[in-house]
Length: 98
Image (cartoon, rainbow, N blue to C red; front, side, top):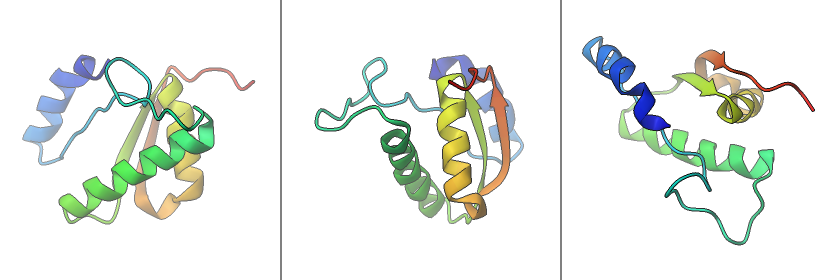
């Protein structure tokens, strides 16, 4: 869950980074886009929209992206599509390719 990142977010924020740990669409109380599937492409598009808003808000050109579990698949997909927006990519608990 996003709250599992709270202690690390505090540490990174103290070092001058901005941190955001979202729920993926459809998980918990997040918005589940009713007219779209949970395809990798659609989830990557949702992540891309979020990242563009965050980069604009913080006046940044790129970010350090961390993906965990299913989020690591989406993070890899985003990085493949927009490598110029990713300063570093860290993947944790990556599911096997299927």
